[in-house]
Amino acid sequence: MNKTAFQHGNAGRMRIHVLPSKRFKTFAISLYAGIPLAEETVTGTALTPFVLRRGTASYPETRQIREQLEQMYGAGFGFDVYKRGNYQIVQFRMDTINDSFVKSQESLLESSFAFLGEVVTRPVLEEGRFRGSYVQAEKENVRKKMEAIVNDKIRYASERCIEEMCRNEPYRLHPLGQRKDLEGITPQSLYDAYRQWLDHASLDLYVVGDTSLEEVEKLIGKHFDLSAAAEASYKQEKSVRKADEVRTVVEKMEVSQGKLNMGLRTSVTYADDQYAAALMYNGILGGYPHSKLFMNVREKASLAYYASSRYDGHKGIGTIQSGIEIQNYEKALEIIKMQLEDMRAGKITELEMSQTKAMIRNLLLEIDDSAFEMIAYDFNRQFSGKDRSRAELLQQVEAIRIEDVKAAAETFELDTIYFLKGQKEE
Image (cartoon, rainbow, N blue to C red; front, side, top):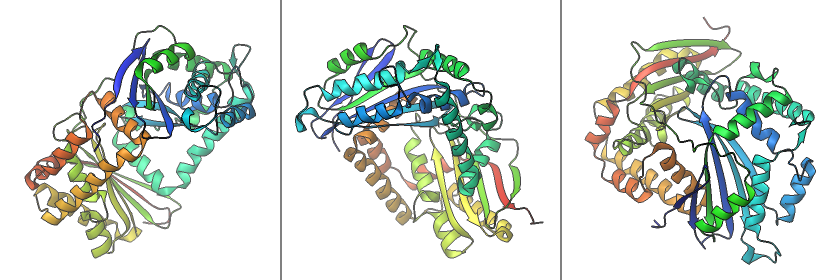
């Protein structure tokens, strides 16, 4: 595992993170812009990057955006909108070939910063607001993405379980926003929301490639038109623990296969020393094909079409997902609860330990193969305030014992059971 580390600096209110490297033939650029999840801003923030990608002051037509990327030797550009902890993150990405591999008369790194800076800070406007046709088209695009979640019952059940579990917390909100809010968004209201977002978001810009921190600082100052507002930083809240009692929610839709999802809460988050043990807990419970849920619920008992678990270390929650025959609800619930109890009792084999360590080890080692994965890992440090290298995390995982996993298991408490079943079922 490489010992290289990101260099960190600032350009105005933007934090900069640069990994000078000649390993890759491209420059990998990521800009993270995060604001707290909130009902009044979530939909407008989600819609904003969809509109920003349509046109800028210099490239007002979407066709011109595509042509500019082609002129940059087919540079890649895209974005994601997601949530991390109680924050909504918009991430822009660019992947541009290193100048030394092509005959370019201009610096492609500078061209990338000029392009990204313009997309984010100088959108095309009409009478001081977003172009109406772009806003309307992207509202419909986002609406379809939201409807696609409802149509994908596995995703829908997963989202609904989180929504019910965190019904009194910002985390209940989907990062794409709420369908009911789309209709009321206008070109002016969205532009106003965009200005608020840009002026108050926590901004982190990452670059991996053959460059330097000093060069990136200059390029940001030249191409990003940002306000002089104070630098915003992420504030971590303690995870919410233990409900008074386990809450069961049953929902009926036109489905032939039941979706049994469960939400658990834990005090262990990414910043905690027990994080490695929590990773092991999730891996043994349901994170991998050798896990207890897969082997006991799906394979041995034949009660589930799929059965797995996830752990969100930034929020401090675990989730279990399974697809079952609707009439097998009680049986499946019982055997899943048995796996949770076995974990808490430390009924874990050395084979489960070694297989899980191998899976986590491979995932951590594979990060070195992707510049964007290296960026994503370092952003965890920035977001959480916990400086833990991959080598350190791997060392911690390798040292985990069964009693450490048992101690982590004792922090995971069942909070919510969500079951999606057919409308005709009694």
